[in-house]
Amino acid sequence: EVLLQQSGAELVRPGSSVKISCKASGYTFTDYYMHWVKQRPEQGLVWIGRINPANGNTVYAEKFKSKATLTADKSSNTAYMQLSSLTSEDTATYFCTTAPIMDAWGQGASVTVSS
Amino acid sequence: DTVLTQSPALAVSPGERVTISCRASESVSTLMHWYQQKPGQQPKLLIYLASHLESGVPARFSGSGSGTDFTLTIDPVEADDTATYYCQQSWNDPYTFGAGTKLELK
Image 1 (cartoon, one colour):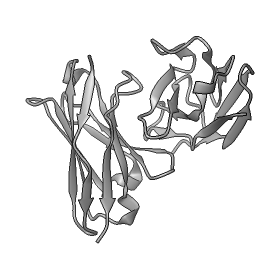
Image 2: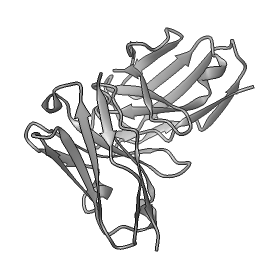
Image 3: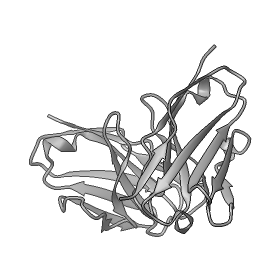
Image 4: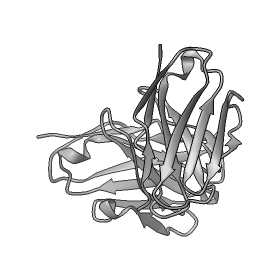
């Protein structure tokens, strides 16, 4: 069974950073890009970027180029997304996914930015 | 960026046929995909590459289109189909999603 297990909810202070993890199992981690998607409360889906776990190559949406950093650890089959300089605009649920090539999604990691 | 435009909401009765449209600001060939998302859940892939039904998805769902105009059809609609439906293109970087179409049942 393909599973993407994300880290838990985070409450963080404005101006700080947070790192979310996504541990993959049930498939060959390096065979599929890992994408990250943002969803603010009651809002739609926004594509942040993707990483090729085989070689670490990344592509970001323009608005996230200075906000998100994607990495992947082949030894632990885990993808990470670090978000920096957090503001209230970053309060959202963040999903990791291998879709559309393979329909697997993490359960979502809630990030709340509040003082 | 490729902008995907969806109608915001639809209301239909169970048993009816519903079509949800997605228009791209530029051609995306057939690299268009459709997702269903219910409140509090992850999105679920329904249709990939414009017209291919994802494994395990009921045959009531179908997709069509190429270039800039795409359609997701549900026929017949069931009560469990209440959800928000998103299109996504993967032809151009960055990948983009439509704003979603909220489907309600009367």
